[in-house]
Amino acid sequence: MSSEINFEKVLDTKWSEKAPAHQEDSDSVIDNPTILKSIVVTSIPSIAGLLFEFLVQVVNLIFVGNLNNPAALGGVGLANMLLNVVCFSIGMGLNGAIDTLVSQAYGNHKYYLCGCYLNRGRIIQAIFFIPEVIILLFTKEILILLGQEEDAANYGRTYVLILLPGMFAMTQFETVRRYLQGMEIFSLSMWIQCVTMVIHIVMCYLLVFTYEFGVAGASIATCITFWLNLLIITGYITFREGVVPEGSWFFFNNDSMKGWGTYLKYGIPAACMLCLEWWSFEVLSLFAGFLGVNELAANVVLFNTLAVFFVIPNGTGYAISALVGNSLGEGNPAKAKRYYLISIMWVVFLTAIIIVVMIVLREDIAFIYTQELNVVRLVVSTVPYFSLMMFFDNLKEVVSGTVRAIGYQKYGSWLALPTYSPMCWG
Image (tube, rainbow, N blue to C red; front, top):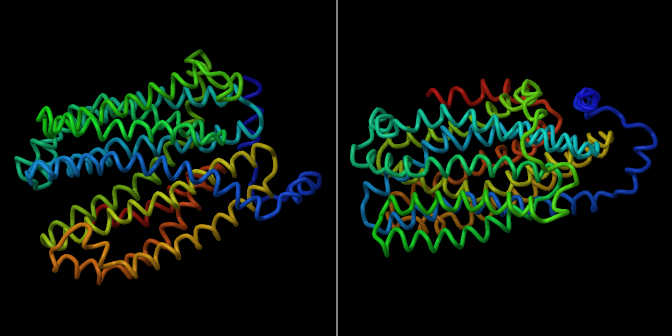
């Protein structure tokens, strides 16, 4: 326990403070190209993993959409929205504590603490999952209350109820993934998700079309995919030596039941940061439906396009969180600051390319989703404004990753509250 108390001093280190002279000298041999290479190398698997995670929902929508049943497609889309709000956002947000605690513990070579933080995170995720399940049991009633058609609400309820066991596995897998990322192990979860993504497509085809389970088939396939992710990554780390540092992977013990206050001190504000942002975009999508069918369709095109491109800054943010946290754990805030500044410049460069591509190909992007000319015109006219929002949103991801790394989630949540709350409540 004494080692953990001493470790708290590391968490309180001001990341912007000047490092001791010997640390700055050792850091000076790491030039900017090397820093940039580290950012790119760690970002790529994180980006790919997030893309595979997003594509699970996209694949489901594609297969259900080919049933030629608008109510079924609408129900699955609404179910995904509800799952994002109630489960995905909260689960991923709580893991912001791992970005702080595991990354700094790893940088400080306190590997046993990394395992303690992982187990605390998994237990806390399981506890939070209970009220999430209770809410999701009333999926149909919630969707009808939001003004949705009963047929779509019924399909949404079927999709969610079957998927509930899989959502538990997803939250646990996400916690393990963030634990690995905190120790700069990014590729393992990516390759697992790549393999299960292929399996998911095959299962969707068999269950939705061959065995004609329809919406239930897509939900069953997703449930199996999420459990495969968790079981494979758990088995691989458990039975293959050297995947993680020795002493950092173990099952629950007495220390797993301690220090929850510290974990939640970082986890709850991190969840507030993510939830306020995520919920605001979901609410905007809901409000778009009140403007008209064409406006709703244009909103779907724009936000699905954003979701695809968003994995780039989001994945970079996770990478920066690990790199900055590891540097702070080493007691080298000067190095952490260099990671942050170079990552900002890197994301500005990438975002500029994305914006140019979106503006030049805006008609082509719109036609990928729809042939309705009124919708295409709305998308084309909105892309320039949308691109401006994307620029600042992408920068925010890098800043958020750094905020999580240095343990300043509470300040991030204070800033998110006045900026996103008006969007959430209209």
